[in-house]
Amino acid sequence: MTYEILQDLPSTSTPGDYLRLHFDPSSLPKKRIVGFLACQRDPLLRTLRTKVISSQLAKVTAAPPQKGRGKKKGGASIEETQEKTITSGTLWEVQTEDTVIFPEGGGQPCDLGTLYIPSSQQTLRIEACLRVGLDAVHLVRVPPDEIPLDNLEGLEVDLEVDWVRRQDQMAIHTAQHLLSAVLDTMELPTLSWGMPAHPSIDTPYVELPRALTWAEVAEVEQKCNALIREDRKVWIDVYAQHEGGGQVGREFRDIPKDYQGGVIRHCNIEGTDRNACCGTQCPSLKHCEMIHLIPPSTPSTSSIPALTPTRLFFTAGPRARRYLSDASRTLSLASQAISVNRTDLVARVEKIDELRREGQTQLTAVRSELQTLVGEQAASQGKIAWVKRGQQATHHFDFLSGVTGTYLEKVPDGVIVATSALQGGMTGLVVVQSRGELAKEVFDKLKKALEGEEKGRVKGGGAKGRFMAKVEGKWGKKGDEVVQRVIDELREAQEAAS
Ligand SMILES: [Zn+2]
Image (cartoon, rainbow, N blue to C red; front, side, top):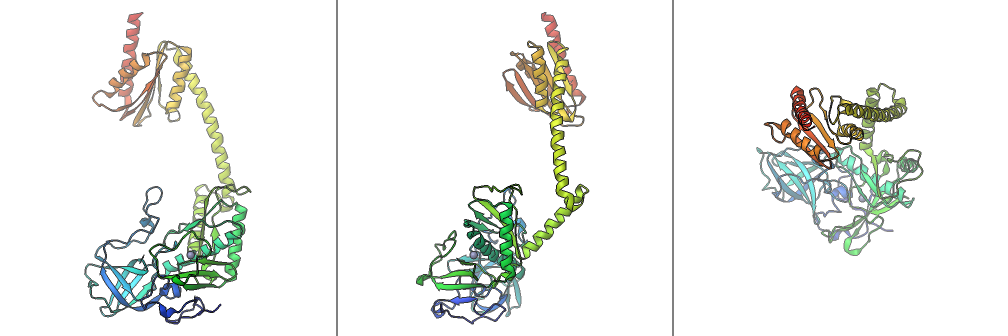
């Protein structure tokens, strides 16, 4: 295979044959297009002197959120995990002849960085870089007291990429290609992938048609790390889009419809993978440092994986180091929380869980026995009964309903009121039950009496002889007095009737 080497950038430790051109580069415009930007020709180049092509006030006032990651589950915005940026001043769209700032694409979040203008000695923050068709557009923040950028056209500027962010995101992207290649050999095609932007230490993922077992995860991780230790070479083949070159490999990300007249890039990992890609890719696997795959949620001993499409989470590069430090600290904190050595943590947590389940079973049995006893005891009060509870362990409707149910088995033509209010607690519970219409009548009376001047404090209702309500606000002595009064009235009425 013949290819051309283009030497138009300052040299770095990236090997000269990293970028392999399969077309005449002189056919491309001087203003470099996305797919052929300096960051995509040499991923280790951190700064670049270049010329401004255009500069205009941005239509937006803040950088857009990372694609496909607007909101996290639970409502927290993804921006909370991104670097805090200033929002005062103005935002400018600056295009240059070439750039070391990668615009978002192919699953890799965009680079951030700085723009230095020698003529005015301004150093400005690049808050995002967007792909618009074939162009990379830098979003540059100009603070309130700085010179605006309306006369920048034709000026020389220096661009510098935020290297820590780039290194993190690039190592993960290359690691994803490696991981997907190893998974391909197990007939596990990657359906999609995603990564949270730096500085998050949240794990990226590849989506697979099924989950892996713990043993498979260990095997894949070991294979990937062996290839990283071999420091396999990575290089990019570039074709002119109109000449073809075709899509190869995983086709889950087709070329965007608004990317026409550009280039086709194939990322190769020596003896391992060849795949279409538009990201920045490390020149060899040593930059990935290591891969760690997060074990699946199925039991560690299970040999049967979940057979539905599943995200396999992983981490690599500098993020893997931060992730593992964080995981280690969490392990220490968890061990300290239950006063046990880290090595004994799992055994102790299993024991605690076993005791918790046992305790729960016993509590349920004791509650059931207690509700029967209390219900039977209430039967001795006759046809109008009131059970008053004030214990946390029995402060719920299930328990009170159990009591009223037992009472009715003993006194089928009676009516029972069960209340529960905790000392200092703010919500009282009321259950009224009978076999006939009586319960509704008693419930309505109670509701009216308990609400008094405070309309709406009793919330609830019922049907078929069983009524339940929560009583908001302080219950206290007064609550009991009110119920007692209603019960007394009922008993008086009953005596008068008999
Ligand atoms: Zn890629």
